[in-house]
Length: 443
Image (tube, rainbow, N blue to C red; front, side):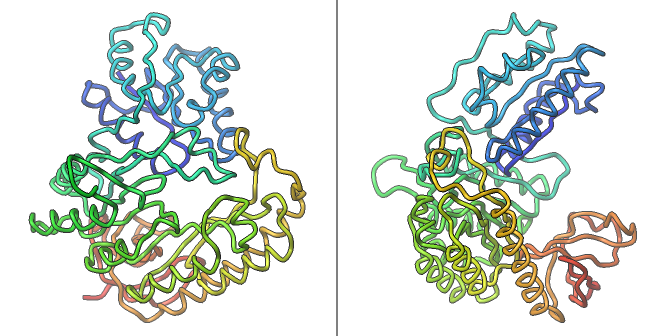
């Protein structure tokens, strides 16, 4: 039996797809191209309408392919959670719609398809009241891996669909987290990324006493890796951080261990206090900038990236200027920038004073132009320095060059041997090409 998985959206979706691949392989399945697969699975995203539009297009594509040859078509992820009934009624070619709280269905599904059962003969699996974490999210032969530590979100930002499709926050057992990290290190993983919709709200209580929070988890991971003394996992990252929950204690834990990469993705969304309040972000621009100062006082070499949402209902030119000014003060290395698209079911979708699309696009273009300048400045500051990179792949443009990533999450191209993919290298940053450094390897 062969499977094929298409994954869209966030890193959590990628981690969950990796866990599903592990399940299928354990059942004796093997990966294959879509045209040969017995099961085609689309792991969907609902954060923006464009993500759902793309998923609908892929579903229509595979529905047409089913008229050429028989195979099982399944849809999972956040779009499956949000549009469970609508999906199958709109596209009868879908055999299974499996929500975020039904992932335990895949084991039964794999067995049923392998035994030749028809979709109508496979019983529906009810949703679990609490999200169920998979035990393994690594991919055999890879050198990086995601490690989910919590799931869901309690923040209910007014524009965001995530709490409605991922549910309330639930944290994963620290024992399970550490056990997976140990297995990953034993398998050759060099870098892990701790994942959660709001990763620094991690909180685990097991018996009497104070619960284990995110800083405590960071310290426990540091201690366990130090006890093992293997040095396989050398870099640790985490995503995503809500500014209101990133504590000084977490920053101290991060600063105390060089394994924690000096990069933080700190989603600001906007620079106007009025818009931040309408978004229900629960911090001000001043509080955010104070947090940035505390981060840099502990880790002067840290790089920061962010998300910026332009065109929120009621946004004025003054609000946009406040956002541009915040960007200048922080000096982000890069940003994910987008304009507001209403998501059905969120409070912002019902708000008045919508910003016209043409205005949103003009404002977004200004934000993008400023970020390009800031990125260039941040990169120029690092020219001439020697840094360590994790070699990720061979360059697509030149087979004699390698593509690596710094601890600060910047990309570097340099001449090198393809056999070094998956290892660390020291490079001298010599020039800039677009958003990528050009470098040479040094001892």
